Image (cartoon, rainbow, N blue to C red; front, top):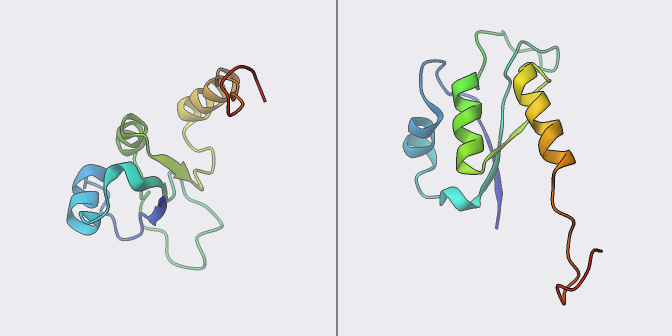
Length: 103
């Protein structure tokens, strides 16, 4: 089972690893598919008052190293947008179930 978790309530100065340990320690890292959070101000913030980004550049880099993705990034971090595009372009083709060819 995979989970997408909200970063709402994460303090700006709190590293994502501490946030995970403090709030989601019962979920194995391997089961966290992504975090839903903003990296820049957004009109999609649901009418709430904007205080700070929920996911910093450090958080996003750390998440990628842990195999965790970002949802609703808003494209606010150009280097990660470029990396994401490179990753998509360089993905290995899927193999069929027998492993002898591309799908």
